[in-house]
Length: 201
Image (cartoon, rainbow, N blue to C red):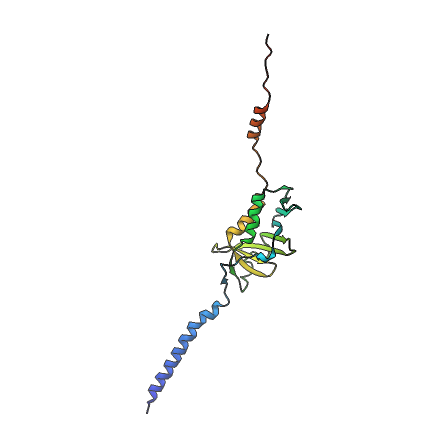
């Protein structure tokens, strides 16, 4: 016959083991509501096809816009118009497809922490296929892992800082072709001028 103290000890043991597994599983359940890493994904889907136009503007009203003309060459339509440096414009197009997702936020961050109420930058994409996307850029995360980004007004991601910076830098450095410096132009003009010959007495 099992003594009563032995039953009490067995009951306590069962409770301790049950509490152990409950505490052990709790962080796992809690982690399900936290951000999930998506380091291998990209924000813009390649199935959208060829980029037709790219517009970037900030909260202060600065604006830059690139688009393809009928010959499929890149031209700049804002802040002023002109033919774009095709290599630089092509690099910007490549960067659009290389916006790497660091984290997909399953639950929104604290209000105001992401900076998406008044986005610092907005990037609008239009594709030859007719697809279009809007990327709103908010604050840099506290850890510096990337920017808070709202995609098409729905999901919120953290996108790599370098990718976003490469595009927003177009606001201050639009991809116009490099021009000759005034000094080199002046030297060329001087070298091509006919020499004055002094008349002989």
